Image (cartoon, rainbow, N blue to C red; front, side, top):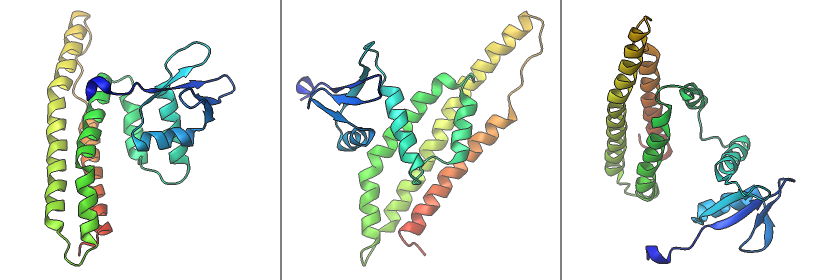
Length: 201
């Protein structure tokens, strides 16, 4: 029951970068925390000296460690696009969009595993997998269209301010449309790679 949901495990990080699991009274590593994430164990990381919540930076560090091991999941083009969005008018919408995208992916994750497993059987049911892939692409395109009004409103506000100050209005950047097309192309490429993985002719 929700009311009985366990409180997150508290991890303390000390100045020497050591991590301490207060629930088990033992020191842990980033690998241990990564395993806790995979197991669905919720935790928060606090600075042992200040008490500040530094969970975000520690999770980011875990991702960095995973990426540095050679099994990268984040394409260079995606990382560049993400960096470009820092300081952009759409920056505030990015976290919610990424969270919604991952939630949608997670909800289909087990179904995707089942389809991949079925593809290695004698009679693979690949049609449903393709349908799910198309659904994901449609969801992605709809999400992109949802961003358009926000982007337009942001530019309109900037143009209004520029007009009041006697400046030049800002036109919609063509680069943004190109980036969105790139993201859609990457998603299509990922789906093509999945098709190759399950041995579709």
